[in-house]
Image (cartoon, rainbow, N blue to C red; front, side, top):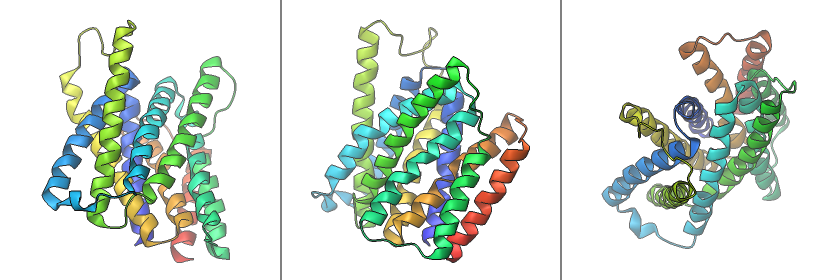
Length: 285
């Protein structure tokens, strides 16, 4: 079950990142983050009311609050990096975020077996290659690199925090709501401040309403991924859940191939194969 939920996480995050990257080519990244997180917060609020999640309030929600502060900043860096491109810089390097939850798991006493350790190495290498690393040096690529590393640090921290935010399903809904309402308030305040400084928070023609379904899908996919990851981390070793969840760049690359007709290079195909081998090792180890 850990593998199943973690792989669902990678699918959801991969699709959310692909959609978010496309949207940031049409509107400011800050707008994409603020609107998508607000939509997710509204949906989660309804879910908490329907399930009685308020009864699970407790000190663990501070983890969710902290994740809500860090998450939007990481997403903003990531979407800006995706808008700058190329995805060969952004997607594979974002997987460095996996180092933080793995480190937390090892610190807490988890010790993967030999097959799982091999799976971790093979899967991470496969994900990096699947992005098709392109590190030759234009200035925009260096900026994308810096933004991606900041995003990876933030994502890894959110992984670790959200895994500690709840112990029950109802508590998870409440934790995700607290995380998203915090993100929405922070994103809205930042958007307002940007407008006061003279930075246009929206395109000149206003919010393209035809993008609202895509923004909704990005927000809901992102929050669902947090939920499936927290479930995976609760059911099994964090080291395994984190690595399998980090396969999302493979999904992003395949989505780019299917929708944008981007051709997969040989190194990307090889990386996808290695990621699959690593997945099998982790799931059976």
